[in-house]
Image (tube, rainbow, N blue to C red; front, side, top):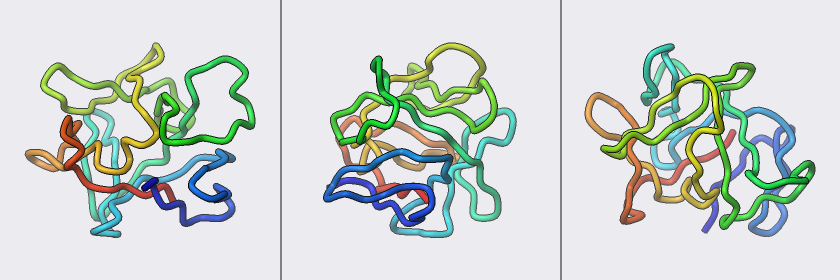
Length: 134
């Protein structure tokens, strides 16, 4: 199963495929008031604040392509050079410059879980939460 896209102005859903059009928020499917938030220092989950992100497919000629679960993507904070990275302990972080972490689009479906103090951690078993792009 793939992430649910709720905002039709941002994405078009085409039978388990997604066409990226604009920026988006990332929120939990189970707790729809829990969002990813970059507070300027670390990437955490928050019920009161949220950050817009952009995503891009990491292959040449990706403009206008349909995104599917097997696509390798990079996530960045919208309108900045801050990109998502995976630390050696599996925790997600944000820092400036470079391509950032290479993750699969399908990782939004069980690939990330909430860790200590609201941090986000990669789930190597796929037992993490499902996240929506809105």
